[in-house]
Image (tube, rainbow, N blue to C red; front, side):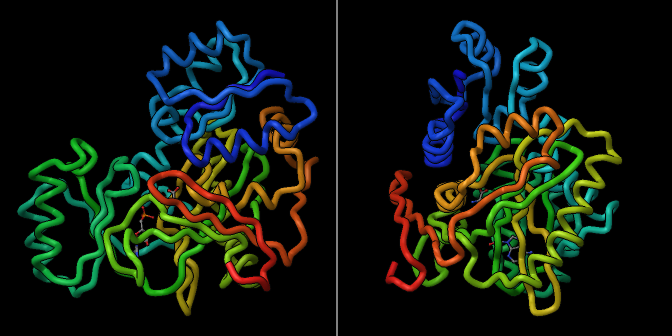
Length: 335
Ligand code: AMP
Ligand code: GLY
């Protein structure tokens, strides 16, 4: 098989490393995420048997719908599925409709109404741009002044263009975070090994949120009973929603979770693999990922089980200047 990977960052390098290990793969090429028509031309002229979409931009742009209409095999959700990530408001409405726990919130598209609301709020709280912002559209605010500035940046200065025209103001949840990368064919959904990413730009939980500075898998704090709650109350309910909404979804689905003392809440969905979580998770996967992806496209995921390296293995990734370095270590050894 010839495999085309869209995107060429850390996540896609990890995907490429894993895909090349499949005995069915002869050739695997990464390309930057260009406009979808250019990518279609690349896939057609290169005679690729399978295209795997790394980042959210092309998915949100409807690349999967375009490739499928031209008879190409492509791994990722349709544009309708990509809305779970590209609109945080749509994702919240989906979660409410299907009984999936998330932080209480309000939506605003008017700056003055949002600041008037902010005056009545208790801090800290969280302000989020509705649309895509490269993982940088979320600000945790400790004072009214910080909140007002975040709203002004998003809604008035349009720091992220249209993405911040609508905002969510939500309750700050205290706990630890977990990233669950899953795969679904729309019939079944299966979790990968858990992970945790480190989002702050500086040490000691200071600095602004980033898309992720580093990751560890499995998540060192997540217990078996947390996983059971996640699977029953979040993962399966999300699949149920995807089915009820008749969303065409054959791809990866990422759950960004906050685990509090009381419960587990969804902070966000991503309709792709996480970056840098993928770099920590895929080295632990024993299964042939290409076989699993092809089974997913054929809606045969129920006949595949995912195998992982020994439980004592763990993988840590540190990103610096955007270039990840992967270390695979024994849990007991120093990392
Ligand atoms: P999101 O893109 O919605 O996952 O938000 C990015 C990051 O902001 C998360 O990984 C958390 O670190 C933080 N965050 C988002 N929402 C909340 C919340 N309600 N409470 C506490 N932290 C949050
Ligand atoms: N690391 C979080 C993300 O990929 O959005």
